[in-house]
Length: 537
Image 1 (cartoon, one colour):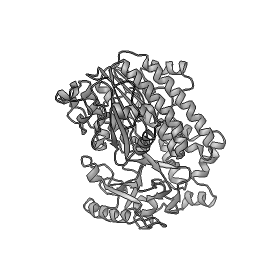
Image 2: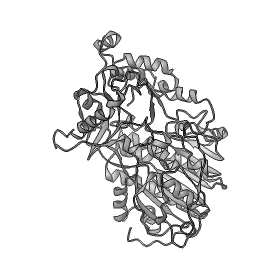
Image 3: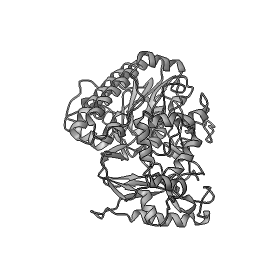
Image 4: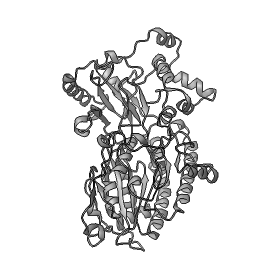
């Protein structure tokens, strides 16, 4: 890809093991341009010495869907995760956990394994090896690691380690954000180095979420490049580590990124077209509304007295949460909707649901009418145009096409086009300036393979997130489960190397798709501690 000659050739042959380095949210086009301009020497080596290509994300291109797809090799209508929160028939929701991922992940298929900071891995499952749960882990206590003694080691040796960083808390404080991101990255590196001391692993799967956090708040290419130079150093360190252990290195992102200009409330589009009704401001809601009390003001007052949203998530019982959220007025896409008078509503990352009587407690659409309503909604959303440009705002995907094997999947999936971001909140206005959310997800992530067995300079073709798992399994001589949706990216391998010369082996795991494997600890307690007020869209 670059004109720079490498001093070393990538190792070739048969890999003994696999290292998967996840970099959340890396945009293919921007990374390629930087490398072509002579920046990022280690990424340049991946282009020149390894196999590379665009990695197409899930629909929608969302962290909660995409990482399970990377880890399991299956689309959401197999692994069962459509967002961070799982929608119930009573319109409430709870946070998804590792127990909701209903297909086995790479670290459950390859032994021994070392896994850390992968989203949707809380509570940590019992594996042959070590696992540190990633994004959506509430606290560093029960369920944070397997074995639990590893959590004690992290507390003792890495006291500054943080599970994540909420970029939304840093509006107008970019300097403080970058300082804290620097600390987060340093602690993440220290954890990786700590885990790398283990020598007997066959799979090492480690994720950095820093690129995603950074880009949501900052979309300034000079600032981003300075950070990517640091990510490039990490790539170089991992390349050295993998080469010393005859491991194939795979570098992947769950989705790409691009700048936002405008956010669009899909719920407000439904309301203005007559498909959605707001909950009336009567009774207690009316009294609170007249007093100027809404969800934002409640959370603001709680925060001033030291009660954070995270504390509410961790400690408030779900029953109280639901009752309070129904009574306090606001802009929530579920709690502030009158579902008994609503034909369709929005939940999660642009997921639209027809309020079907066979599916929801207060449904108003007969199952036989669902297809007709869906067709109307497709016309509605495809007809929404920007007030200044007149260009279409949404890409609309039919849930039956994207998720054909799951009748409980979303009916439609909305993605923003050309600088538009989908907003699920039920706001007064349809269009809003992007403000603090400078950039958002795009489908085009990155894929690199490098090391023994990989063809230098190879380009992958039409690769998707579900292709990562089967490619890694085949490379190290492991069978690919029959249920896997992805394919082995055979074009990535050296024609003379072992992965290219042998057939892909398969195995029938007879895996229970209804609930996955059991997890350590009390899952109901996990859900209680992860549930929120429902105020956070």
